[in-house]
Image (cartoon, rainbow over all chains, first blue to last red; front, side, top):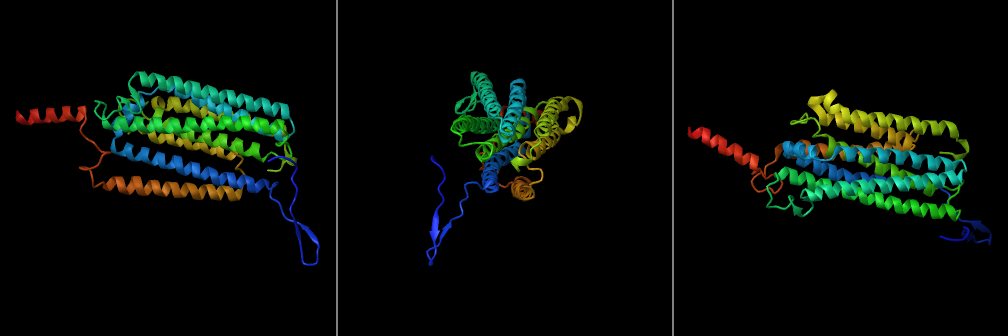
Length: 229
Length: 124
């Protein structure tokens, strides 16, 4: 991880030295590899959406009632927060690519602050739900409670998926702090910025997942009693 | 994406334009249940989400012009949606284990009330 890259040398039968091809600067390969990782994320969340759609098909009215009870204002604010954070992350990468290191770091810090704001808002939302007896393995979600079964499934998946998404946000904050360290150490530079590129891609996939999580959980019950089903 | 061919002002302006587009679509997400396609809220919300997702993937994730990755993305989405179609479209429609399933409990307070009402009516 540290020190300049020293290429490996291979010697043929005649004693001639040859530099072995290194892949440290394979920008496209690095990007392609990260896209493959993101497909695993899509598969993971895709499976969860599949479970959600499965239970939704079995309990449509319960899902609408449960969705209608979520706090759309806080969910909407978080949507905008993530949306702006995707912009600051993108602008940070753009600044890095053109050599504006200071501006790039500022944009990464802005993204970190917005990510933390997202978590705080989500925390308030979960706390309110907990106080209403709605939380994993708690009060209303226990097997013996009077809450309709479909709503228990809805809220179980809601906490699981938004929790996993929140965990991705925390990982993202860690990655951005690591990125700042690498920039300060000049390991990430305008001519070698694949790490910055891939962390920006990571942040975009976290945003992308929320783009589908938000309407499915918060908005399907916004249309009244039937929600359009 | 070649770092030697960056038009900073143009790319920055592109980022802001996409932001405005995403903000407008987010606003549409909120007004949709009260303004249009009110009988198909779920479908409308998913259409808006797909448009937002397309904007993010193409412009924020720089997929525009990346032919190989676009094909890979399309293929993986095809696989996910195929499983969606099989599981949701086929399996759920022909669900055979209602009696022993733990995910299809039908005894709810509402169902109890409905059953009680129907039995009262039939008694009369």
